[in-house]
Image 1 (cartoon, rainbow, N blue to C red):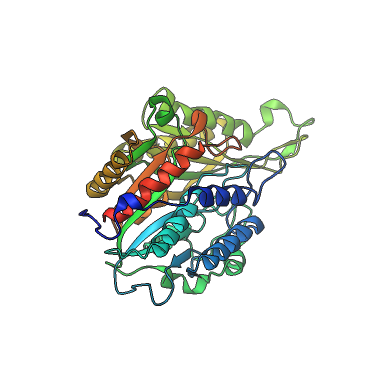
Image 2 (cartoon, one colour; image 1 turned 60 degrees about the horizontal axis):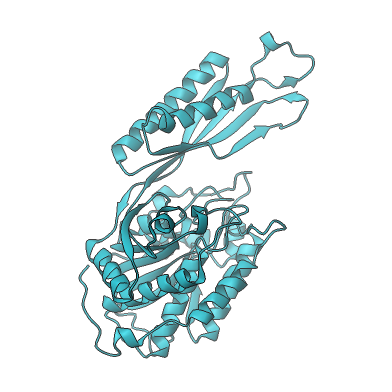
Length: 422
């Protein structure tokens, strides 16, 4: 990705409306807020639909043109007469859905800044070399429907990675909720963008970690995004009465699963086979206090920047599940929930981000992302650049997730200046 300069108007005379941005962030933070202060805006749920509708209303009020594709992605463009559909697109965005009891900034910050930048470009009458398009990717988190990066996979044409009839964790189909969001499972292929239609993708995100805050930098220039493999393990045993079944005659899948949880943790903590390894979800059936479980489903989340190490950790995880199940007399089955390979940011876009940060007087550092993002999916069809801003206390995916207002505005300004450089 090459970079250049814009002569009209000068970059230094352009700025986002910081007060408008912060107001939008606060208003969207109220959509899906639960009693503990966290957000339960899981993809395609009622609160997610409310946030999506509000985003489209904000875009329309700003004089922009919004639409929803078959995958449920929201796309916002300049209005007819200003838009240049003949030009390759500069996609800018993130997602609105959250994890259960999540924070107010993960994803939402990026899409609200994308909207602000598009609005700013229109207000200043700027002509870019590419057509700016703000995108809200559907179901990035996979909190309810275990198909994370659903929207970006569809847009990138990775339809073979998506099930024909997706369901949530309880077996309820996606088809109906997707239709409520404006999508259409039968027309999913139409969401894919043709080769060459995306010039680049830019994403702004809170860091979700402690590095920037600890180092005193305001801007992170992302160099790489970690790879992730999500495995689904089902452990089956024999249900029985908790009081009448002797210990030596039991086949308890929950006891086996507990052994597996610790063994999976050891893949990274002791064996160092991959950067991190986590069991984040356990579904126990029948999940009764006086019953030995019949079966347990657990998720195994493996992450690393090296595909070979990721593959090795996956095989080790499969072997551990099989050996523990056999030792306990249980049966186990492991399947792949999703795979996302490591991705590397474009050098030209990284340079443009760093130059923009320096131009605005913000200290910055180059750093990898330990979390997954839509950017790594889009990297298969276009170069990407990604910007981080500090997270207070380094926490994310929790109600306490926060970033200072000045940092939120700084990140938005850097993203705007980066877009103007292209």
